[in-house]
Each structure stands twice: as structure tokens, then as C-alpha cells.
Length: 138
Image (cartoon, rainbow, N blue to C red; front, side):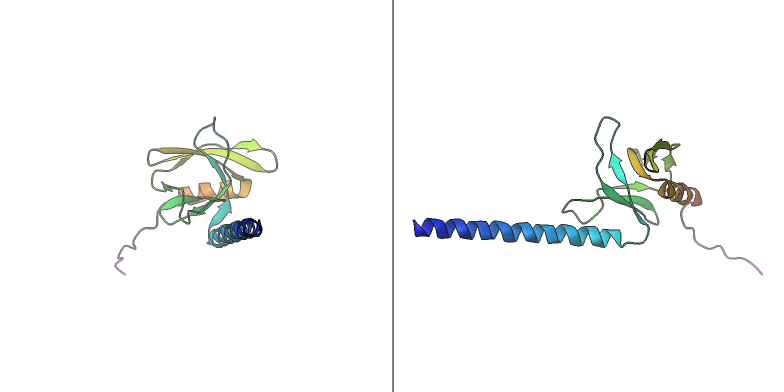
């Protein structure tokens, strides 16, 4: 009987340690993604019949990257090229949130974000890709 109690206690302790390690990894991941310049809170869904997934998006130099808020994958779940990106007109939602449809590179995603980030997204798309300097004769 005592050995059974000891085994159960060890299994419980092991499960607790694994749970704590996973929570620490999730917190470190979310914190590291949130500290990248150009990152903002942004929910995503693939179509209008799917539910929203919380996440963070980031303006890259050549693409928009989206990271799931809770997950073990450190890289972005999807990337959308900036080059041919189209952003729909915003649909206002409560608490200064807007919903937009973004199309790029044969992908279509629905994104929900705060109004100021929508303005940033449109400005980022309109500004275009960085280009090499041209030589000018003076």
C-alpha cells in the first residue's frame, strides 16, 4: 500500500513539474513575441464561419506575420506577402475594434484589431516594400 501511495505522489509531482514547465515556455514565448518591434494584438480566422483565435501580428519588411497567442510553435502560424496585399474596408465592432479581410499571395484571412493598428496596417501596405537606392548624378 505504501509503495502505491509513493508512486501516485511521484506521478502527481511529475505532472505538476511538466505543467509548470509548459506554462513557463508559453509565457516566455508570448513575452518574446510581444517585444518584437511592430507587433500588435490581432485575432485571426480563416473564414467568417470559423471562430476567432487570439494572437499577435507583426509588420515584417516583406510580409505580415501572425503568431497564435497560446501555442508551442515559436514561429508565425502564417505569413502574408506585403507586395500584393489588399485590405478591405473596416467593419466596426465594440470597444474600438475593427474587422478586416486581408488578401495576399493567394491567401485570405479575417483579422480583428484595434482601430489604430488598422490605420498602421493600411499605412504599412500603402508604403510598399523597401527598394534599393538609385544612383543619382549630381
